[in-house]
Length: 490
Ligand code: ATP
Ligand code: MG
Image 1 (cartoon, rainbow, N blue to C red):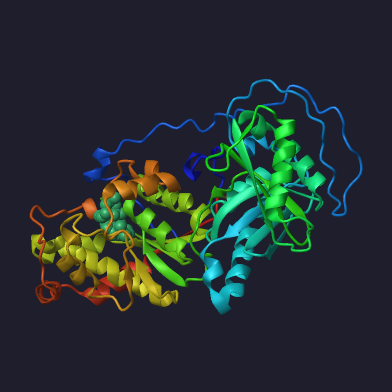
Image 2 (cartoon, rainbow, N blue to C red):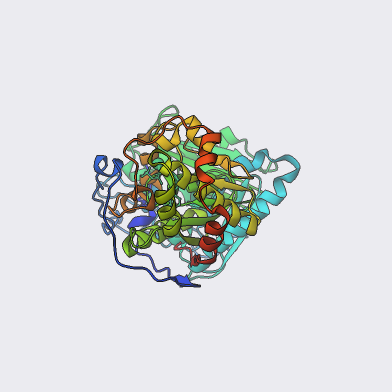
């Protein structure tokens, strides 16, 4: 069972682009679609479909008053028989308005960080704080490989914060949970009420307990058996299945409280953004480069985006598409700056002075050079591209050697060994696919040679390039750049 979740491109977005310097952009030029665009059609998703929720037929008969030692209101007890339920996600069945519900974020690779672990955790908590602040005030702290996100005011939007945390790198699994008093009766009451919908809908279940607080008077197996037995009495239609249950009820007895929750969902994984340094990512309007950016950001790298535009051969729509892709990446990559570099003069010069079969190669060397210049200026330590071995003529081993010949820092190519299908799957998952396949021209599709060189040599390419004023062309391109800040949409 997984909670209803739509990738970011299906959400309404409210971000704005902040312009810093604007260069004139003529109208759209010719449209040339790369071969991928015809192979993959966008899928139709209906984002507005509300989640089906099962309301219980009758309200529980008895409500115990008072609060426990934590100030947590006692859960409602005494549920009666319910109408047949439609199977839906555990989170939907947990209901939306449990006042003291919290979010448990399980740490991923961060736990392997040895002496550095604390700094990774601190960074992760500050990333979570930044992402959740628009959903209210939260108390965020870490204990025992888990980060707790606790509402600090009544008006907190727990569903919004949960969705935001799911896209924070460094968290491997996530669940909403209800804390309660550390007694077996309170744990049972909480499980019965909080997971009542899910228990009603399931056919089989089991209870799994973890007892981090060793002073708790029962062992974890004993506790599971006791709560399991009581739940079985309360929901007699359920069978116990310890191997393949439809629903697992989790109990975690920790220092400060016991927590009850359903199965955790997998989250973004990776390492906290900012812990892996800074890199410049070459963002085109295609499928590959947004995926490459996502994959490197997932390793904790904060990205700056660079895009090469060739007006009037590339138009305003192509540029807007790139900004939209950057915006769709922000739930994963955080705030982004997109540097748009005018590339027309460079491309026209190459066409005028270099042999046709080397057009693309020399153009790619200029891209690398300019990205390298920007990276040095921004104190970044690597470049990121969506290149993929053998995908096109400019991505053979020899061609890659020619293009990276002009860089002074590592070129990270996370897609190098992937199949297009695998890349497309990730593009759909992160929500960039539908934008990537919009049919607007990219500067790479302008002046495409009929017979590009697939096994070029570095020396030969350098020789052809010597006909150009490389320094001057790069200086003018950098001087005409524009920077656009993209605010995170989630
Ligand atoms: P596609 O899915 O169409 O292959 P792509 O983004 O991979 O999209 P390629 O022509 O394969 O496009 O280019 C290889 C890489 O070069 C890109 O992944 C990107 O990193 C970089 N690149 C290409 N064109 C541009 C551009 N106009 N601006 C910035 N980077 C670019
Ligand atoms: Mg590509």
